[in-house]
Image (tube, rainbow, N blue to C red; front, side, top):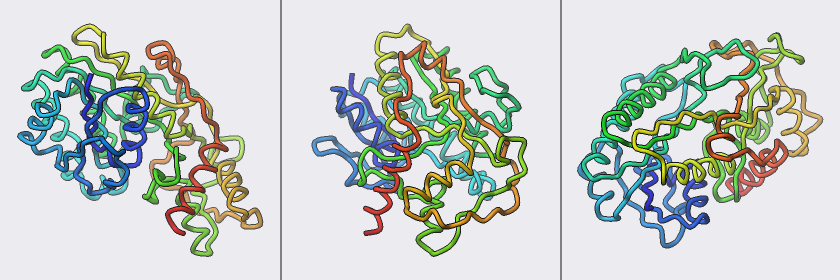
Length: 323
């Protein structure tokens, strides 16, 4: 098998590329470098710079490198930005996969691992979110990820593509400092940024129906996300035509925002800083925690890293970035 990884120079993509390479797979990276970094691509791995909206270039990359499967990670992924720019998000996150599927079917590449999101669920009122929990996304971002899944499942039925859609929960950490997240959109880097500015980290609401009043989330190390992609890629290698899996990728354990902030402050040596509680953010559900049973059954995969690994490695990455 030879795998084309779209978005393979990004934060999650670079970890997936490393996992595939370490697992003995042949890899080609395809990235427009709008948020990715070319120096994240391992030596010896080809890099094709281009947009997922460029069908001819995708076909050329697939044919030139004898690609038999695709790991599609390239996407726009900020919830707030998607509300402000829904047309851009639908173009990148729906037309992009459509263009990719057209290139794949034209070239005979028939395996696809799709980077989806727990945002497809919206505000589920359940203790554990299973893949059968109703999908009621609350943002254009979540909508585009769900439409992407529908599109892929339809292509699997019509064209025999073997596919796995992986619904990530809250990704954190880094395998190495140079691979750390360079964005400041998730809880851990947001706290680091506030501390660096000499400001208290913010907690959005402390009156939820949870043990400490703050939102509860399922946090997962990016290395576990990467290992799930490798497991899915291997699962599809010999899967029957038309296979279409949908799998939650999380730890199945909930941690509150307050708990996470306290742990982050300890790692950063700022235990004397008191978090600032502000108003709730619109659309934040009280609890979103994954059931990862199906991923274990289908892929033989379970998450291996805990919260301390996520926070410690993210802190090392932050210090590396800002040294």
